[in-house]
Every structure is written in C-alpha cells, then in structure tokens.
Image (cartoon, rainbow, N blue to C red; front, side, top):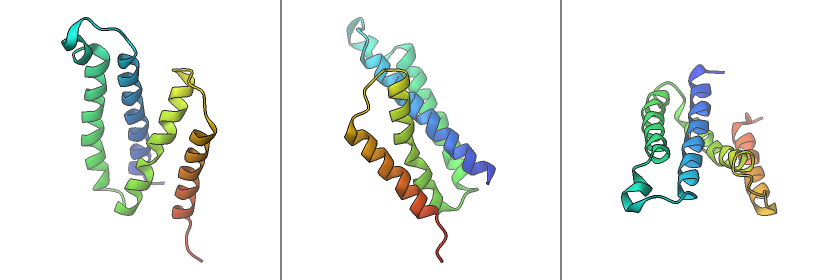
Length: 114
C-alpha cells in the first residue's frame, strides 16, 4: 500500500481527534464568551485541522484522486469509535448501520471489476 494512503488514513484519525477535542470543550463551562473559543482544546483542535489540511493537500498530490474522498469517509468511523471510547456515548442501531454502510461502500468501491 502506498505510504501516502496510510498518511491519509492517519490524517482522518487526527481529524476525528480534533472533532473530539471540540466536543470535549463544548461540554465544559467556560468563563465568558471568549473562553468558549480561546481555550486549549479549541485552539489545539483548530491547529490539528490546519496541519491535517496541509498534509492532506500534499498527500493528494501522491495518491490517485479517486481514493481521497473514500479514505476521508473513515473520519465518521473514527468519530464513532472515539466517542464510544472517550465520551462513553452509546452506539445506537442507526449509528452502527450508518458506519457499516460507510465501510461496505468503501469495500465495494475498492473492489476491482471482474
């Protein structure tokens, strides 16, 4: 497998991690309006987003373009896993069905035609 494809998978994980940081910050009580937006978790999350954007742009120059959006859909799977592991959220039937559909779509898209 191309090392840049692996990089893109790692970047989808970091994107999900930054979304988790934003959710954790949103669940906290902050001092004033600026505290909601100017705290460590929010600033770290947006820095991660910026680095992911730059590295993803570079990775797209090395990977076949048709695989980029397919790899990016794994962010939803990583968000589900992180929300269960870190936030202790419940996995509903619909969340599970949605994520299984994403994985099935990736598998079907990646299959070589006969």
